[in-house]
Length: 450
Image 1 (cartoon, rainbow, N blue to C red):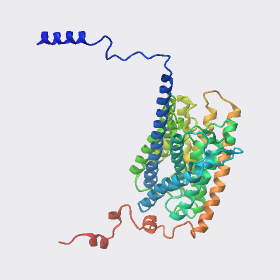
Image 2 (cartoon, rainbow, N blue to C red):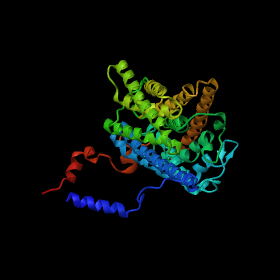
Image 3 (spheres, rainbow, N blue to C red):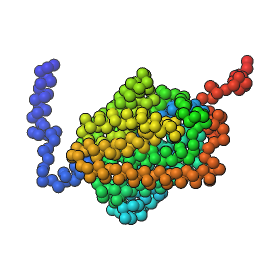
């Protein structure tokens, strides 16, 4: 049998021409080769941008679980509804108005003047407009969702929707035009100064955090949050496991948030992904260590928010910091989460710590991007970073405060009427866990008789 096989092989070698089946060597002079390589890179850029945008969109699930877990069970459905509408209504209003204000042809570096409904976008390829819109729309929804947790458990759904649409259609896009307009057809005044915020520590997170601060102040604290002498009381959420799952989902999505901000499939995403991972871990370690030293026990809630603080902190400098400085940025952010949360709690009720995590850590991360820049320390660069931080606050906080105040008038008061009943039953006529909320008569009525 072996001999017969050998004979067949020999005959085959005689019949097949030399070199048949081999891949011919490419001709370096072939003009199609550079174009083919360019097409492959273009396709990779599209695929990476869309994949990263999908990861950022998945962060909505993380925010929903985090906020629901940190809130009481009677308000869990309301949290879900707000997050769903942040993404849904936000996508529509950003398509109609926000994208043009942020990325349209700039008027004096302040605001875009075209690109509404994705029309009139210059010489940009139409397909890239679609991809870029998708990526930027999920960022806008993230800024809105940050606010949701800070006003949780006591704001009317209708009033919240008014603000959610306003931040995605107006507040976030206008400030975004200052910092990122040049990514498309615009040219922002902060860009011209050389401001560094690669993926949005200030542009997205601090804007969301300062809006959250305004909302929490206008709405006021939850019933029972403060004792008669003003001492804040702890109101624990109903599920730390849900909150922890939310944090892990956010952590995963953040690789799309930061590395995806290249909007290009390139080797630069390696450093960004590493820095993102390192800073998140350092943030958790920093927050856990401080609470362990201060109280004698490692606090789970602060540790979870420490992860997020580290992620927010590295977002500005993820592309221009080295690994050790990414760790330092995250470590300090973890400490900031603890101390900022305690300081803010003395005068503002924020059930999830959004203001400390996103507002304060966003400001720190923006400053860190200048302090620890791998290109070398520059006092002027740090000054530009400080100007950007201030500009974002001075725009976002007062405008958000006014919008929340207007919404308060439009809906007959932002506060719900019965906090004891909870938003789920009061606003949505449903319960997240109906079997746990039944009284004996309701349970008996649903028990089948034999």
